[in-house]
Amino acid sequence: MHEHELGLTALFNDHLAGAGNALTSIVGLPAQDRPWANWAVMEILVALVIMALFAILRSRISMDKPGGLQHIFEIIYEFLHGQTEEIVGHHGQKFLHVFATLFLFILFANLIGIIPAFESPTMFPQVPLGLALVAFLYYNAQGFVAQGPVTYLKHFVGPVAALAPLMIPIEIISHLARPMSLTVRLFANMFAGEQVTLVFLKLVPLAIPVVFMGLHVFVSFLQAYIFTLLTMVYVAGAVAHEEH
Amino acid sequence: MNPKTFLIVVALFLLASPMMAQDHSGGWANPIAAGIGMAIASGLCALGQGKAVASSAEALARNPGAQASIRFALILGLALIESLALYTLVIIFLKV
Image (tube, rainbow over all chains, first blue to last red; front, side):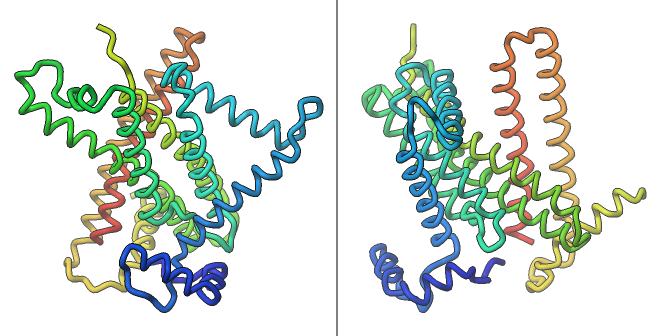
């Protein structure tokens, strides 16, 4: 469906094909003619954009005369800090860097698709899958670290030990459903947003698709927030110490 | 049927047009089933979201001080219900 190569991807494939094949050969994939896929190049671009933005921000940080960029990032930080406080609790601040990274990466990845020459990497199922796996491994790892492996795994048994044969499959399935739902939610929202805009471009080439692009921008923000929020909820559930 | 429904049906068919190029190994009924399935999923999702929004609006009217928690619950609930309708859309894109 999306075989058309972007300009930037063509640039990567023309000049960096060797590097691309070297990377894919690490996992054992055969060498290809044009190894760089659109989504991989777009992901790298999003990461570079975020790093450049933070570099600019860092050079302009000032206590006395904060500029516009600093204000925006202070708002973002306050928001994420407040949400972490509310959901994970005060000792959850040590997870804030991961939540903020997820939030900013997904946000920028979603929004970069609005610009004509680029595509959202989150529009391809691999990218939300990778992000969901990161979130899944992260909350499980934090659960192991915070509670010890045995106590954490005992949560799967459920409240009464006699119900264990029933509870364990249910718990495992519900835990596996989490990265699946995170993946599908993000992917489907981004993919459907672009498709809806394309459909209305076919119907009415002028003015009306802008409404759907606006909706897509709103959905981009919302989905980035929801992904981060759910990761926070899962981490909170994993590290919560039960009070008896 | 009224003009709005007709336009939506036309939009759905146009949405399926890139897929017309694929071979119809699944049969002629696939696009129809996709349309009906998606319509049912969206309708039920809308009912669920309507209930969520209605009760959160009522809660906000009763207790404006709890804005933050009500808003949090509302957004979380809406996104989770929305994702159920989106699962149907994903199946359609995979199988049709």
